Amino acid sequence: MGTTGQGQAGQDVDEVDVPPVRRRSAVRVLLAALRLTVVSAVTGGALAALVVAVIIKDVPVFLTGGGVLVVLILIGVVAGRRSPAGEEPPAGRIALARIEDLRATSGESADVPVKFRLTVAPDDRPAYRVKIEQHINLVDIPAYRPRGIAVVEYHPDEPWKVLIVTRPTAEWSRRAEEAEIDSAPESTLVVSPDMSEGSWCMLTLFAFLAGAALVVLLFRGELFTSGNDDGAAAKPPSSSSSSTSRTFSTSTTVSGPSTSLLTFGVMRVTAMELEARVDTAYVTEVTIEDHRMAVRGDSTRPVSETVHLQSLPYELFPGLVREARTTLGVRDPRSWRIDVTPGSGAGAGPRVRVTVTGKEGTAHLAADATGRVTDRRAVGESG
Image (cartoon, rainbow, N blue to C red; front, side, top):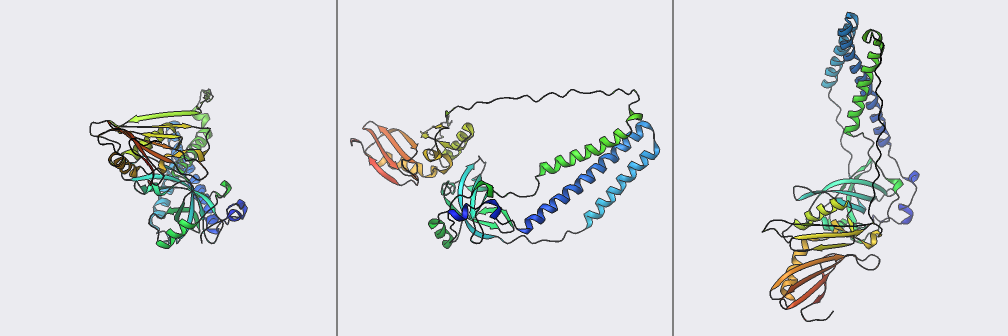
């Protein structure tokens, strides 16, 4: 049923299948890197030969360098006209995955880029770890929490390609609600064998410079008649030490006369800003007022005793404030405040407390991590 137990998720990395297509992909990347290295080095050498030939006035060297460049250009034109064989993308399969961690970054639209660490548990192979980044709508973010279960699409031949299915079918939604998936060990993490664009650029640059340097060294006698080589002393890299405090706190104020944290989306965006300041999503206390949000934390606390900033249902908080201001006996509420703290007990979610104050006194209501009201204390009631 898409559920994995301790025995399946805890297998050693040697037991996790590595599809043959992944080996072929790695071989293709290696051959492409080798081809790029040779072409870049030859190009750098040919250009250096042209420059050297002009300086030392050597016609054969100039013709050699120019001839090599012409050959490279012709090869590039011929290769560019060849139509690459079309390869159909591998078919995706649906599976369940455990959300190990997630972190959202601020975005300019309603879809926010979120980085996930997942344990994918296919029905026909051992579970494995993967890291992905996917844009999730602001309204849907509360549905994804650490240790929660999500429906994903993965490619058996390219297991590092995983996509969270934001609108799964009813059957898969039911399986996700009933499933319990153990965390796969970090040794099962799969990554794409393809090199990043920055790696390709660095490889091209180094090969180009190496080819040019080789040609210059071959003609160094003619180029540097003085025989004096200017050496540059390399400066040792400076080392810096950073210290992290064991506790932290920060706050921010929403500016503008008509701006309030009750405005849809403002709470979540403000929480993202605070998360970026403290460089962690796990805090021990969140305080929200009309124009101010603050977080506090302790790096020594275990994750089970913290609140994950991006998993809070900020979109439901304005409704809780409205209910507290209208149903607890405070006729003219002057201020309100939301306090979020970790729940007590294993597996307990965060505790949400909404407090309103007016001429009649102070009242509050309590809610769970899903926004469901669990307790009320109207004006004049004890507790």
